[in-house]
Image (cartoon, rainbow, N blue to C red; front, side):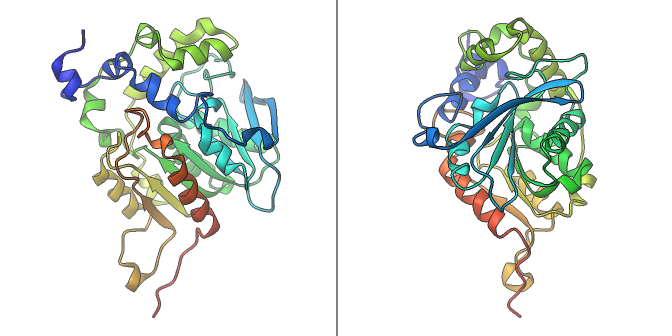
Length: 315
């Protein structure tokens, strides 16, 4: 039974969010194959599997090859290529966009190794290498936002620009409700869109409890990438909403780490940027999660990719 404290957010657990439909409904407003992809059928799509670090990794390439670097989108926990929905469709109208299913997610079967940010980052970089892509504009959300931090730290030559959405650079910076929440169980996903999609597309649907166990493991693992993030040389944009799983204070801290936050009239506009979508959560309620703001996100991401460099001061 959901308690009053769970409804009001006091002591809110991820299990309560799932029971309330949060991670099952909030993300589906933006993606997971729901309506809203007007014109998407006009965009060419190539699908395939790549041998990547022992994985049989599923990927899709949307859009036509252009002179611009391709985009690589990295999804969050329990998600898959379906997560991106209208954001992917919008970006692919003018750019070539690569999406893929990470280890144990979607159409990529699990292998005998834990889920950790570092190996997932190595997988993403290896996929780019398999596809013959020297550099990409790399974008990640939630768990994927952490993965792309590690792609940039471990494989900086592969990353032209970096956009990390809804992810901290150290575990202790998550909102307290996340840190205090306990693990989830496979039963918590019954009736959610997450489980429906997994059972529909996964090569081994019976492996869902293994994925849940591995996500619980990575969620509980401590990390602190402060030094690595502060050393990033590529243009980087942090996207954290005003009601996200990451507090806005930490977003401002990360902005300082990547060289931003100064008075632009005097010091110019650096390559480190911060975007804060207003009235926006991490996933739920439906319609106001980060990926539901696909019009805002696409305009900010494309503008950043067009003009990612330093703008010198006027003096």
